[in-house]
Every structure is written in C-alpha cells, then in structure tokens.
Image (cartoon, rainbow, N blue to C red):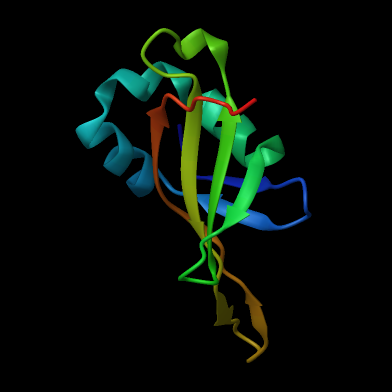
Length: 107
C-alpha cells in the first residue's frame, strides 16, 4: 500500500503508515483486498469522537461488499500535534488500527 496521507471530509490530514496497515493485517489478513475501502473510509466516512479520549476518533463507512459477515469498515484515528523544524506546532494525525464489523442500524 505504501504510507498514505489522506484529507478527511473535515479538512484534516491523516497519515496511514505501512506499519499500521501491517498491524491491521496481522490479526485480520482477510482485509488485505480492501485497502482502498479503508482509504475511502478516511476520506468520506462518518466520524465520531471517543467519549473518554477527546483526541481519538472512530471513522466508519458501510460497504455491502463485505456482507454477509460484515458491512462496515472502522478505523481509529488519533489527533495530535508535534513541533516542526521551525518550532511550530503542526498536525500529526494518524491511524491507530482498523477492522471490519457488522453494524445493525436502528430504525
């Protein structure tokens, strides 16, 4: 896949490193064919803030191609800042992990 930098629908830059992709595939190798869907989830998926950790967000998006076992991809993204070479704080937002899940919608 190569490390990727994605802009989400809110204008945030998010890094999805090779190391994090390998981490996801270590326990979920069946997700390997869906790397582009993970990237799409970051770009246009829904985002929900973690109620306990304010800089952690859960991105999710429905994909019927994952049925019958799953119907959504989920990614956890951590939002941080870091100092750049000039001493300025810059975004350092990154994917922590991801998985596939079946989510039953209410209603």
